[in-house]
Length: 437
Image (cartoon, rainbow, N blue to C red; front, side, top):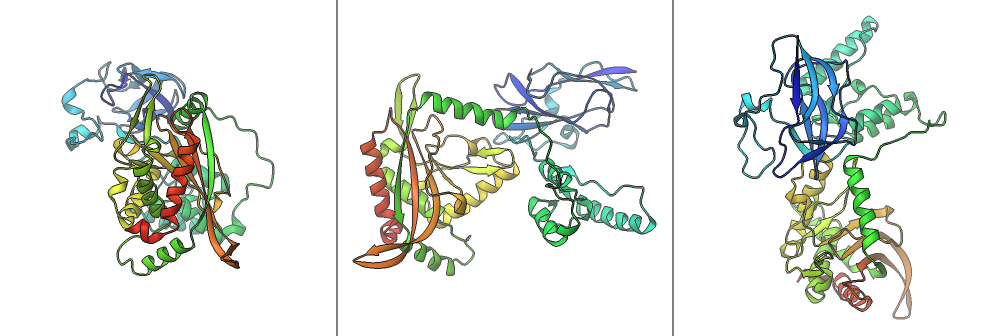
C-alpha cells in the first residue's frame, strides 16, 4: 500500500488558486482511474478534476467554498500498487485546456488534463451518466431494465447534475425517460411529466424541509459583483414606452421569407437600434475605471446579452454588434446563449461587454430597474410586449407596445443624456425603415 498525493495542477495562466465548488467523493470512498473527484472554479471556468489512479480516498483538502493553492495537495488516495507519493509534474503531458491555438492532447495526455467548462456548479460540460434500473426487479422488469440499459449504452444518453436532481425531486427514474438527443434535458423531463404526470410522485404533497445552501462558484461571483455594483455605482433608472406595432409587422414579414436563417425575435432589432443610437450618445457605450477615474467611450459596441442558466445569470458578448445584420445577430444570440447554457462558452465570449441588454420575454413585467455590471455605465432591460388601446390621430386603435428600462451610472451619464438616448432609440424602433437602412 502507498499513498498517492493528487496535487492541484496549473489550470490557467496566471492562476494562483482555485475554489472548490463540488466534491464528488468523500473520505473512505473507493475511486477508479479517471473517476471525477471534484469541480474547481477559477475566474469563470469550472475544471473537473479526475483521479489518475485507483484506490481509496484518505484525505480531502477542504470543504466546498475553500480556496486551494495551485500545486497543493487536493486529494490523498491510498493505492494497492507502488504508486509514487506525489503526482508527476511532467509538463509535456499536460496542455492548457480551451486556450486559443491549444494543441489537441494525445491519448496518453488525456488522463492528465482536466476538462474545462463555463462556470456552473449545478452542471458541468461532462454530465453524469443516467442511472439504470435497480437489479432487484422481476423478470419482466429486468427485461425492461435491460432494454433501457441497452438504449442508454448504445446512445450514450447522459444527464446533467441539475437534471438528475430535478428527476430525484420528482421521483422520476431517468431510465424511463426518452430523449432524441445525446443526453436527457429538462425538456425531456417536461415531456415525460406531461405524458405520465399521474404516475409521478408530486413535490407538493408535504411541505419541503428547510434547505441550507452554501453560496459558492458562479452564484458567489454574481453576489459579489452585484453587491459591489450597488455599493459603488449611483444608479438611476428611466423607463420609456415604445410602439412596436410596425416593427412586429416587419419582423413577421421577414420571418416568412427567412429561408435557412434562424427565426427572428425582437432582440436582434433592439440590438441594432441600440448600436445606432450609441453613435449619437457615446457616453452610454462606455466603461468607467473609478480607481483611475478614467472613462473610456468605446467606438465598437460589444453587446452583452444576459442569459439565464441553471447556475445563474451569465452574459455572453456579441463582438462588434453594430456591424452585423439582424440575421447575423439572431444567429449569434442563439449560438452564444446555447454555449452559455451548456457550459461551452469560452472566456473571450464571456468578457468585455461595453453595454448589456437583458430580456425575460413575456415574464418581463411592465418596468424594471436592472443593475449595472461594472465597469459598464449603463444597461437596459426589455419588458413584456402587450397590446393596449391607444388613441392615434383621434381614433382608438389596438397597438403593440413595450417598455424599455434603462439604468445608468450617474457619475458618468446625466439624466438629460439618458432621456435623449431613449428618444433617439425610439426613432429607430418605431420606424423600421430607418432601423434597417
